[in-house]
Amino acid sequence: MTGHNRGVETPVTVRYPDVLVEPISRELKGGSTEVPGVVVEVLSSATEEMDPNVKLSEHAGMASLEACVVAS
Image (cartoon, rainbow, N blue to C red; front, side, top):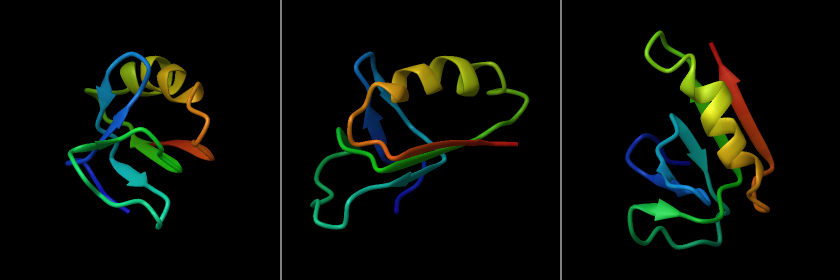
């Protein structure tokens, strides 16, 4: 499990979720991953529009993603 410093390579851009869970068999090379297992976004006043709308739609198309959680 990693946090803000590791990105998720979506089809559009690289996003930096609040919590990122990756498969244990993967080596953590580089600053991002193309195979997230779980992504958690924590809403704040600064991200309450972006996280549930833009980021969720970008993450939704990723085959490896088992869950995407938006918490407030």
